[in-house]
Length: 253
Image (tube, rainbow, N blue to C red; front, side):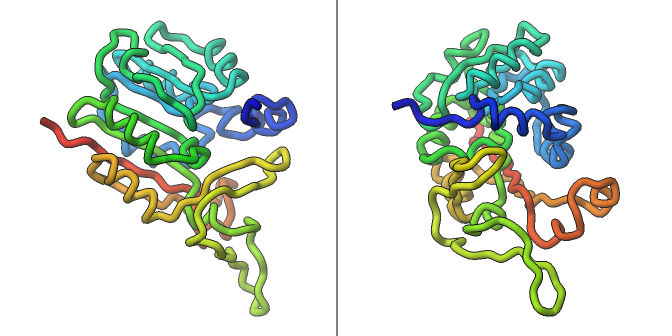
């Protein structure tokens, strides 16, 4: 039986495509500026965009002068839209489930050369076997190549029920439970039963290290005061990070 992918479902897409980050592209993603700061020079590099969705980062990378961009996603609906919006011959999109990816990433590049940069935005927390995927990424990268990704922060993904509560003193807190109980989380997000994977911060970091990468930068991202003033998030969001942003690299020969 084919595994469910909510990104192919009309009810899910009706809500998802109206998110600011989908309506406005990268500029609508509150964490984009911080994520962009982690990226190395793009011009002349071969780039892979894992879980590319609508292809907004793929298009941005091509616009920054990437030699080639390979966007991979498991949703036919997402890729149809990405291909319709693509405006560069440097971009190639491929349909593949990151849970069962067995592709030689380099063979899918326009020129067939090793990958320089692998990027992934809010996709790896759907992947069941992260170690396996990272080993594929490491094998595809040229020496000195970079891995930059974002995921839901483990403090965000851990609770059985995600949401702030008010305690007797009047403070609003983010209840944290099941942090060390890793594995699948079912959430209701536009539709019921969206499957994601919770991992601790240590598990994420050790998976990156065990795949042969050197950690360069971690960002536990939440909205800044000026973003809150502009309506991006609320004062509550200063009490727990939304996202974990990671930059790592392979040793150069």
